[in-house]
Image 1: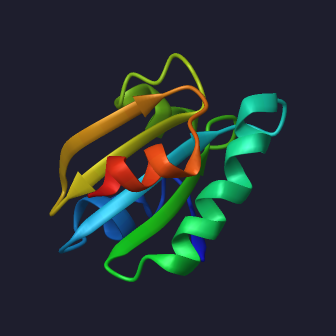
Image 2 (image 1 turned 90 degrees about the vertical axis):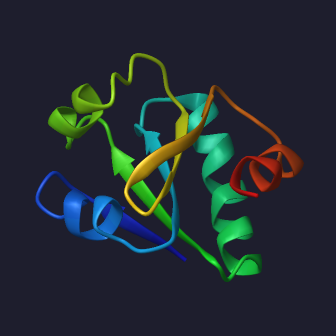
Image 3 (image 1 turned 60 degrees about the vertical axis):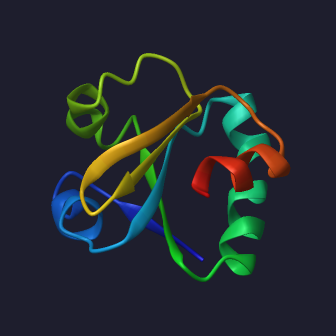
Length: 101
């Protein structure tokens, strides 16, 4: 399951979370984002030790700007509030799994 994150709850859900969080920066008009979304959802059902969040860049523009998001889809992995990994563009399921390990 993925959690929809906004500017209002980003700190609480991601930066203050103790553990690993994958954040999917996306938008509804983005074709590759629409292809990646179901993969993220599938991985979230299989992996228990990572929290999965989505940020709609059109609705939470401030959050996207805060992390310098210029291209989507953009996946950022945080661990205990620190950015530890990132992937820009569409990736396959195996690559998502590698990204969060």
